[in-house]
Image (cartoon, rainbow, N blue to C red):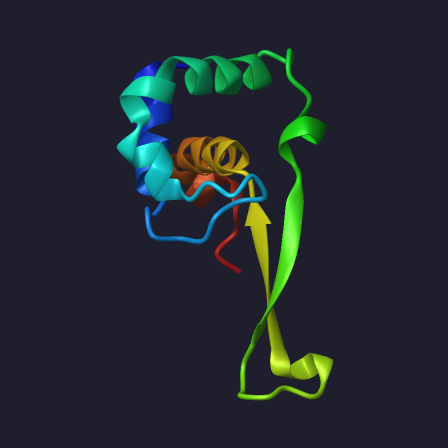
Length: 109
């Protein structure tokens, strides 16, 4: 896995999405890529080599966003998951690697 593949995955994720549980939004990672690149790439590579537990990265907070003004029932909220950016990068890398094989492993029916 190259640093370029990790960067490509990171920048494929939209910069204007909500922040993760750590409070940092994707735009932070995009703007400060040159500063954090080495540490972030090291962490992602460690994960793929089995040296880093997904448990540490899979911290997700659920936020409820109202669908209507003054909601009164739980059905009037939309849940969103705030995952860590590193977790999303790993997911994006996996998705990018699987994409070329999807037609072969998924039946059209």
